[in-house]
Length: 176
Image (cartoon, rainbow, N blue to C red):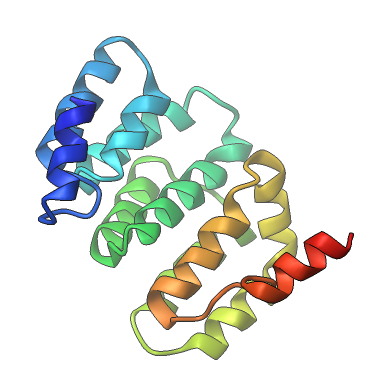
C-alpha cells in the first residue's frame, strides 16, 4: 500500500497520494486498533467525517482536559495539507461530537485560525500566534510539532517563511 500511495503521489494527481488508498490503510489500522496510524492516513483521505469520528474516539480514551489538543492537532494537520474546507468541517464535527465546555483558549485559537485563513490576513495570523502563545505552548508540551505546523501553515497560506529559516539560521547554527 505504501508503494501504491507513493506512486500515486509521484504521478501528480494528489500531492500526498490517492485518498482512497489512505482510507484503505486507515481502515486496516482501525481493525488492528492502531488509532495513531489510522489518523495519520485519514488526514490525507479527504473524508473529514470519518477522520472526526476516529479522532473523537481516540480523544475520549484520554482525559477530557486534553480534547482540545486532539482537535487542534488534527485541524493543523489538515491545514498543512492545504485543505481548509476539510479542516473547517472537521472542526465543526469534532465540537458536535465531543463538546469542550467551556471552550478553552486552544479551541478559540483554532476557530479564529480557521476564519483568518479564509482571507488574506497574515497580520491577523501573526497576532493570533502571539496572543495565544501560552495556549500553543501548552499544546507544544503535548506535541512539539505544533510550531512546525503553524510555520508550514504560514508558508502555505501566506507565503511567509518561518523566522530563522534559510542561510542566516544555518550560519547561526554553525556559529554555536
